[in-house]
Length: 245
Image (cartoon, rainbow, N blue to C red; front, side):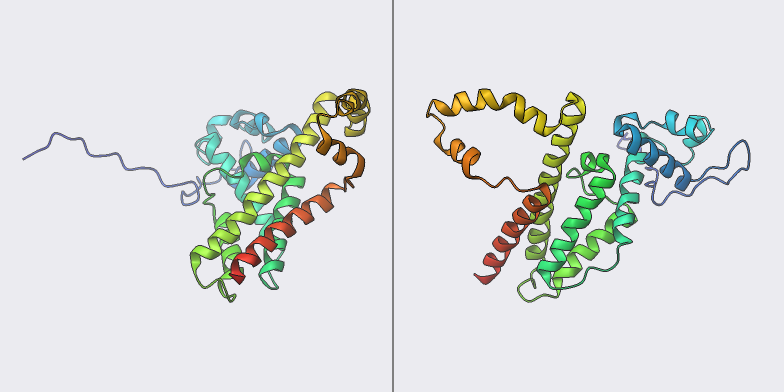
């Protein structure tokens, strides 16, 4: 007896498994690789909001309709961009050393990638990335710990890697926000501090903020590189203490 339900339409394969159209020499040869490289150039120069199939097509002297054979949506295009960056990270070679060195190396790879491609930060921390380069990066991250004493449980491995990733994403987003604030305001951090210093001094003089006064008076205010490494040390020390228990 029929239920009256329509059969579900078969979903198209993900972009990673979908074959490219046959290449045509005119008016301009296309490939996913060329599309991705053009999109990355736009994102690096103008930011992620400027990336569109229309703009990428114009850069390649091709109409957006031709691009749809290679990339169906902007979401797919962004996924390809992210995977290209993971490929750059993987090209740095195998993760070596003990678990602390491995996690430190992974953290610095992500930070370097985000500095080279500032838009990469905006695409981190959402759903897991499923491109082949992203999966290879995740595999290398987990494998770097899975044979280490104390990390026999895969949940422990995932917790450690996830904790470091959460710290890295938060740290590089903070760094990026500061840089964007400078670009948007046209003032450097030093200029902004000079402008706001009289107000801060008046507020501290009230005596209502004694701990903040210690920060202004006694804190060393190291460079972003030092702050990043010290924060990462705190995270790794926490993981080590948990393992010891």
